[in-house]
Length: 294
Image 1 (cartoon, rainbow, N blue to C red):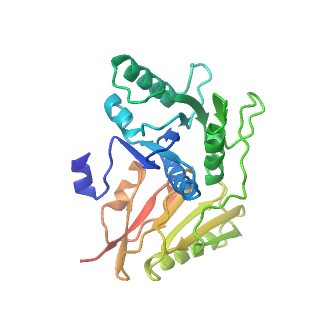
Image 2: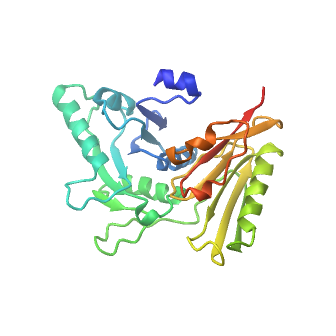
Image 3: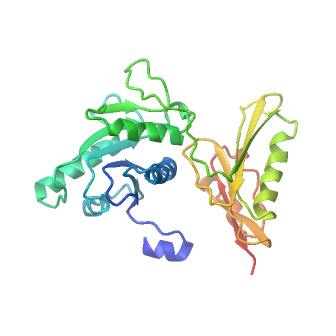
């Protein structure tokens, strides 16, 4: 992992913990949803709460020692969030691993907790729903209860198991100086292309932190399109979503945009001096970065 960080400039541990050092509630999850939890945890901690997020960077092989050492000793409740649903299993994959790891640590005498934390299971992102800060705040609020739900779903109204958590859409954790805009159009009318150009200009020429994502159906022509743009001075972290996102991190007014993304689009990143091709054509989530020319 250290070698990877040296080569790429992106440092990861097997498990990365962010949040209060004396947190009593910790979320455990992996993937882009962890970034949404990261932002929300910092926002809640600034308001006096004691919460944290444990990001699973390497799922297999699972390291028991690294997992236990990454958790704060003060944690009382752990919520494991899986973006999957396995009704025929006793639990979802990540939840099963966390429960087994805590039991193994207790059995082998390496547990560092004065009292074992309770572990609840949650599901998010079902039906490709957005995973928003308001939903994360709802999960933390549920964890604070004397008897939280042992299994819950967030993001959809589950009228089968009735385990859904409510959330308050009015919660907004964006910085006051961050600008947000939504544009609606029709497929092939040029709205999406115009907004791609706009966000690139804002990110590269205006020197702002900028991000955009676009929503439209497979018909392309004639269907409703939605363009979401946000930009400001502070870095913008990606959020858990199944939708295409493009982000620029301005490092200089003289910058070229290169793209690091999923395997389906790696060929586009072979030259750092070229503009990124349209990421919406691949149907995958790609992220653009700015790199200063030498």
